[in-house]
Amino acid sequence: MPPLSYKYSETSIRFLIFLSILGLFLYPILHGNFYYPDDYYRSATGDISCTQTGRFLAQLIFITINASNIAYDLSPLLQVLAIIFLSFSLASLSLKWKLNRTSSALALSLTVCTPFFLQDLSYRFDSLTISMALSCIIWFFILEKTFTSSYKKILFKSILLLAALNLYQPTLNTFLIFSITESLFILYDKNARYSIRSLVANILYLPIPLIIYKCEVIFRKDESYASLHAQFTHNSFIILNNIRKLLKYAFLEFGIHGGGLEILLGIFLIIGVTNLLYTFYKKGKLPYLSLSLFYIILSICSLAGFLSLLRYPVFDMRVFIANGAFLSIFMLFFIGRGASFQKTPIKILLASWVLLIQMTFSTQWGNAIAAQTELNEAIASNIVNDIYILSKQRPVFIRIEAQHKTVNNITTIATQTDDGILDVPVPFITKKIWLARRAIFDHNVIYDPLGEFILKKHDLQSNATYFRSIDESPQFPFALAQSIYEHCSYEAMRANRYYNIYKKGSYILVDFSHKCNE
Image (cartoon, rainbow, N blue to C red; front, side):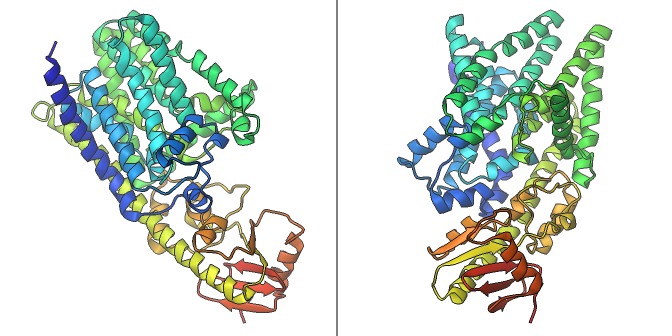
């Protein structure tokens, strides 16, 4: 057993390695300095709103950091703290799993370096609490031999899972993936009996935290969103349909809908799966091959995981947090726990290339969303100024007309939502990247921000009332908005290259399609 001083020194070195890699991955986001959809809401209202999504511990952390019930924009501090938490957790896990530095850097980094987790890191507010949730899952596996008492171990591990649920529920899928990874290590080092026992033992930790969390949601009946999305279903048709949809979205990262980088990742995934099966076939012939194949199928199902059991799961990129852990399984067995460039240079180069693909993804994502945010901010500022001029500072009611068509010009992967798609301008660089990167399916990243809260961020006058295009209201009914739009019935109008804005009485309508040009 290595001395304690060596362990601390090695942890520090690995922490710095992970911090450097995750820092490079995060840099395009920080450089872009953009706002994510929920960030606009919190910046404009100061409402933390984590309890509404069943993230009660996240709410408490926000209150603690801000020393207030008001959410303040602390970016990039929270995002930097996020990768510090993750770097230390991954460094400790790499020691627990007896990986050398090369394997740690090239394989475990993929847990975070994935286009889907990149969305989570893009949050100016939520990035820290989501990363803490993933860290809780990681520490579940680190603390295996820390406690001499089995009761203490059960207590602390259950607390970690409950904390992860209260910070960000989808991280539970990562727990399943890591449990499978650990069982594969045990299968390779020991035998099938110990491997299966380890997986079952980890799964048995789940019921108590899940029951406690379910009770938390039920007791907070005032938070309808959390209650709605925490409802489980016993309908096999709904569950199977959820699995199908969730896996379809999860495997967009691996090229099932095209995209150059995505297809390359898909090719590596096939190589990694083949290598893992061959490794265990050599180790124990058909029994080991069969069990490793079962683990692979189970890990694929874990990408959908507990989300598939929900009556109303969320189909957004940010919930596929387990994709990185899934890819890291095959990378770990591809390069081995003692990876060395001198022994297997081809494998190390290929692994480095996979990590570079994720870095490229991050850079393109940062450039695309930063360009879109910059344009959205400029348009929002112009709209606020035009409203001020047209209203003459009197009370007005505002709508932004939604056309439900721009999304098809960006990508055929994205599906239309009930909220409507604003027909807003998209910069050339954003459109080019969105067309190339087929794994990016969450079009709300582009369109949602151009609404009430970005207008408030640009000091929308206090006597202006905003309605979404889908909101019916007697104060600004659909029929009136349609009349203004379809019949060009207005008293005043201002136009620029991006939109027309019409005024009729105390009503103002913003039109991005330039329907009525003078």
